[in-house]
Image 1 (cartoon, rainbow, N blue to C red):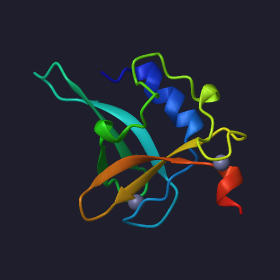
Image 2 (image 1 turned 180 degrees about the vertical axis):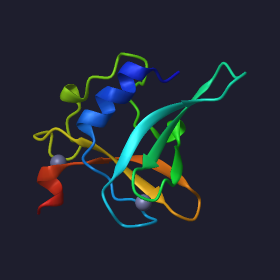
Image 3 (image 1 turned 90 degrees about the vertical axis):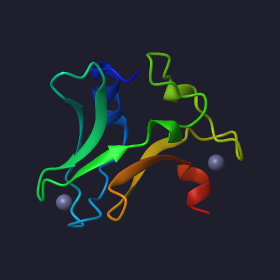
Image 4 (image 1 turned 90 degrees about the horizontal axis):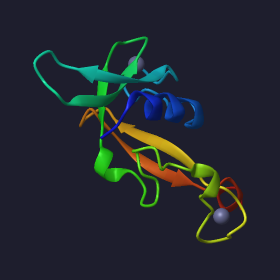
Length: 110
Ligand SMILES: [Zn+2]
Ligand SMILES: [Zn+2]
């Protein structure tokens, strides 16, 4: 279950993600709670074109749990074991959804 603290935490950690619809980096994370529903959806919303993308929680990287145990500072790259990996989101305009991805700044720059 994703909570609000997790969302704001992720908001700070994930670099600005480009909106696949308008191409601008104005995606914001938000909780979307429907009236009458006990479950809140974790979504990415574009400030500019107001497109809403669902975030696939199942794609969240193993070892990074969205329940308060999330400690990305302990997430080291499996390949170089040197760098901290960054959590990024890749969003699709066709499926209106985002998936998590891990990126190693060190390995990626090689
Ligand atoms: Zn947009
Ligand atoms: Zn690496």
